[in-house]
Image (cartoon, rainbow, N blue to C red; front, side, top):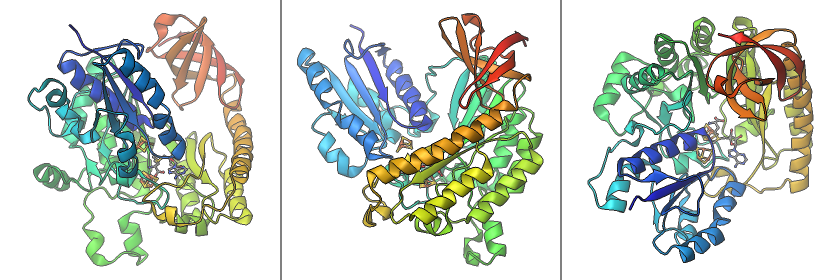
Length: 457
Ligand code: SAM
Ligand code: SF4
Ligand code: F3S
């Protein structure tokens, strides 16, 4: 009898992408996906640990899983993704297996006692859910150890994929008609720096000196009608810049190829006709002292300088950021610097998080001294500024015709993303999903643009 699987994905796009690889491995051993959890013989939970609320969601599944097991004693449950050792112990009671995301190639062995598949999990060809927009991981892991963040502990050290694999995957996607490629990594700046799994490939990557801007250029040179987006970049200065400022010892100069200057990246974005003018540049705090305690090695002045450089070369750039409010010890005055930054930058979008202490991290040892109420008030304040700046930015598109990739259809309306990564809503036919269209913007709201279809491209 055909075995059925159901995957629950929490967290960021990296986990979404990993779930597509899990699906591919399961389908290689003849498991079939189901749309609802109840008929599944196998439930895989791909978890996120970035905030306690994300972890709580997995603990919250307990009752549901027990109920399903009672109903179907043959049900197998697997936990994977970003799991902290501390939670692993407690969660092992609810799951049959807990496996490292890098070991999903072992699923055939675990489930069917079949030979193991590919060792390097990023080489597994994903079963894409979306047929026109694909996430393509270029690296995984993080070596930055920001004081608040679990990612270096859950995903381990940075590992870059060989450029050859990435280009080959994208070429195949374009051949299959994909229109949007998301280059994904926790820290794309480090692309090409370290590879611990494959020393030979690493040496090649180093020899070829393929850093992130060069990779971006290679992707842009792939023939076809498609858009390129990427996330996330880190505003830290390049090793070269740090060296000239006397900030790193000479021996660190051999940092590999991943190091790039912002000028290099900005030029590539500006020139690349397929690279969309969208930059997510997480600032995390608007105050230098808070940044220092967060172990984020840049100042607000340096951050603003990058934004200014980007704005000069790419005047229509759409800017977003990630920011944390209520980091331990963040005074009201220090928070006012985040307010000031929001007013100065005029972000199009921001992902504002209330600080959540995470085990193992450096800040877990600091006193979580900002009350829940104060954190939520600070979030509200930033959100209100964002609402205004985003509306101001969106108004620039009224009466203009923009290119849109429709993604969803609901009650006669299409919802898509524009070249500048703006959500656009307009009347249209379902069969336009995944095809570029031109839309005249008639109204601007803070989080959405409304428009009328002009014609298909
Ligand atoms: N690599 C990206 C960067 O350099 O900023 C961010 C990746 S992190 C997985 C996603 C976002 O979660 C972060 O940008 C941060 O704003 C938020 N975040 C991470 N740890 C957090 C914590 N302990 N509490 C609240 N928000 C957190
Ligand atoms: Fe986390 Fe910092 Fe790495 Fe981003 S750069 S994943 S915030 S440790
Ligand atoms: Fe992403 Fe959460 Fe892991 S944000 S990298 S899934 S801890």
